[in-house]
Length: 377
Image 1: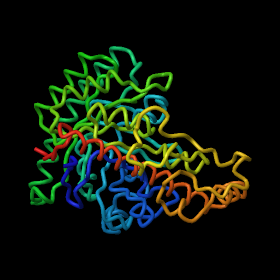
Image 2: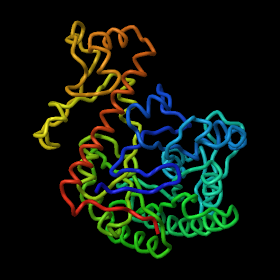
Image 3: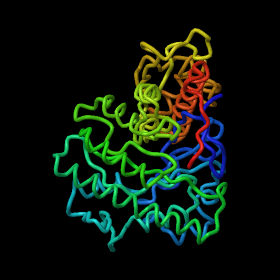
């Protein structure tokens, strides 16, 4: 039996890839496109949503699911990574303190405040199926003092998030089936002792699952395999772990083999819009197909060699784009700058990712030791 995670809007089969719908939309695609591409869930971001369209608008439109016409699970990211990318790299945009995050987005006329309590309040009010604790994100190459401060603050914020979460659940009288799940985030950069201290403290607080915190790549763009593996080992195997920000196909496979079961990234859809399309090197429906060696490739649709090609993007792909359109036509759309290209390319790359998840689920089914039903605590 494939591992699964029960959520208010559906049961997720694991592992699963969630495209980034940061502002309540996966760019160039609508909810029907996502469903037909067999996407199970999406990730939205409270840091951005509280600015655009704003909390009062989201409430007026009936919450995130109704607003986006998306009937399946939504994970909401807390904004910790956005604080890192905005403030740690551009201090003029705001400050981080033990109280929370204070920031002024570029072009904005007012200051925003995001505390652990407010992050949880917003995520629950928006109707998230999984809420993620506000954390203090760092780069793996940050100095020791910065990593120590990040872990201390992440633990403190995790404790405050859990307390507010429990208060909100009680106040709203949500049942175990109705309530969202709450994930903590394990920080610590490249320091094993800090990763352990953070994981142990968060496990003591108690969460339904965990995320690998911090940028998952080193300065050269290589996956932090050793630290990802070590951090996964710190968390009991019956609790799901989210490899936050991991979306490169080979990295998803590597992290699945390490025990991670949820993934999100803007990379597949951004690559699609830029003409970088994902393709299997053989038909993944063939029983002899394996996710080893050179199992996938990138097809750059602007290449002249595709001008008169009547082949689909990828062998054996069952997406709408591959079923109806040739590489030659997609080359033409891309060259003309037609917006239809963005939609068709996005549909394909998302189906590539969801098909990859199906292959990984089949891999788990073939190994009973990997099959489990994850029951949030």
